[in-house]
Image 1: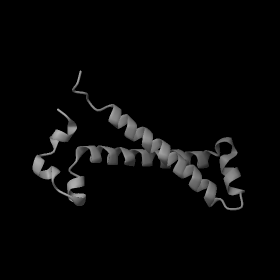
Image 2: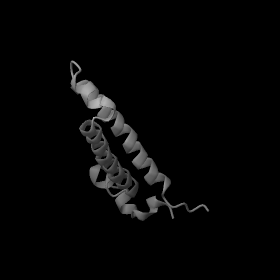
Image 3: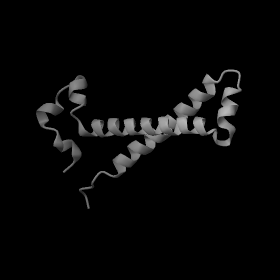
Length: 97
């Protein structure tokens, strides 16, 4: 049974945000995006706190430290959220076996 069949037909027809959150695929991706966000915050703060490879020193000695911090954070965010969401999708059960 596909995961989309878990939602009753009358709920599938709902539009807007109300109907969106009843879709199990959207909930699966949203939850795993939040997991990726938590991992990003953990890795980002860990890199800065431990000064790995002199990264903290390099960032804070730059003329505008917010630009490299934003680039590092959003690069990690895209990567780790994609990994978490991809792992969730790949671990869904298959019915065609």
